[in-house]
Length: 136
Image (tube, rainbow, N blue to C red; front, side, top):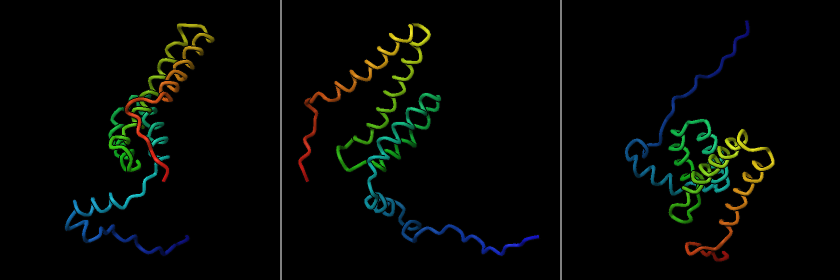
């Protein structure tokens, strides 16, 4: 019989300010966070798409919190973009899958890819709401 004498795991201890003044502690924690725009946009969009395709729409609330936490301090509602991209992706996949039994493979592929191309072209057209970012 092998015995390992591991020390006991200490209990979780919160900082004193977190116990006495939680709102101030959370505000300080939020201001000290590091933005991770790549994770905040790409990972959240893919996870939102997977959640919607699996029918677990309740996962969008925690994903919205993650998108907000990892987003950059850019435009005010920029953290909603990954959730919108995930819903567009889920719709795109749903359209492609539902067209497969109805149409032959070639027209289905053309319609499916043309939807993505149209969306990319619409995104590349400058609009009135476009924000100009100067070089830093």
